[in-house]
Image 1 (cartoon, rainbow, N blue to C red):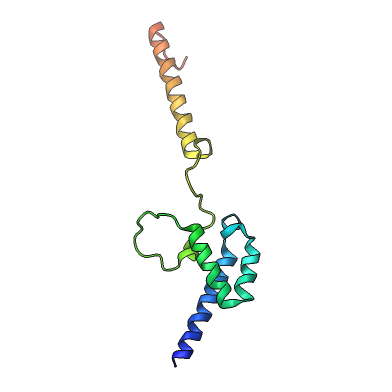
Image 2 (image 1 turned 90 degrees about the vertical axis):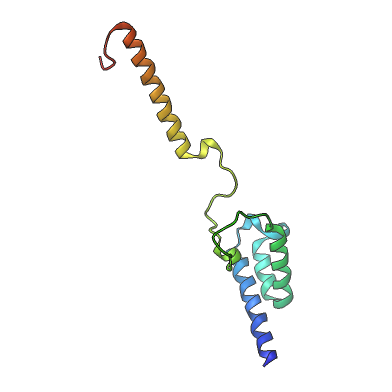
Length: 125
């Protein structure tokens, strides 16, 4: 029975490493090695290759995380690869640009309103 549990555990580690390697962002591949080399490396020498990949992936992607609402049991499987990482430049943030445009329009309207109040005219004319 203990052998069966060990075999199931090793198969689970290999399958987990394979899935993580397939879903991995190619730019975030550990040690700068191509993503597909890691995928093959998790299959050919399954247990050793998978363990080496998981350790290298953990070391490469280790960084402090903000506290979340609970433990992250899925690890890399739960990450959304489409989510932007790191700070966004102001000119890439559409909400920031929209607010900036509205602020500029308000300032222009206020200036126009002040200029017309000085002349005694309404701003709509």
